[in-house]
Length: 46
Image 1 (cartoon, rainbow, N blue to C red):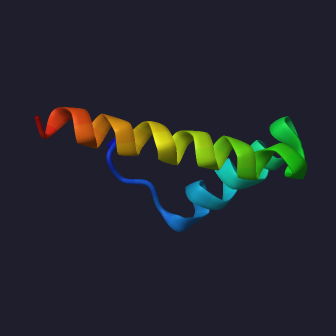
Image 2 (cartoon, rainbow, N blue to C red; image 1 turned 90 degrees about the horizontal axis):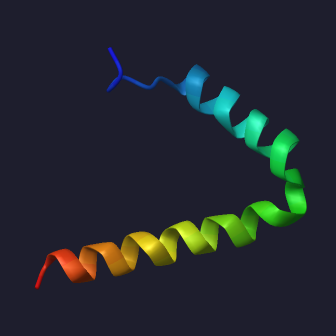
Image 3 (cartoon, helix red, strand yellow; image 1 turned 180 degrees about the horizontal axis):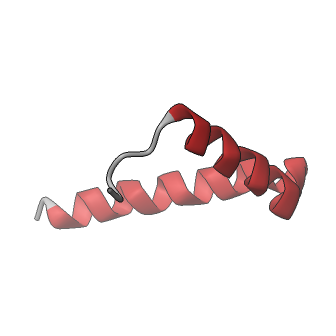
């Protein structure tokens, strides 16, 4: 139920993110999320 996200739900989330955070801040938020995931993966491999 919760593990199945289809293309429609993904598009809706993207539209909501643009409305909430504006198109100028989204690249910065994406970079921060990617950096956090990278650090998390690095730490869990130790």
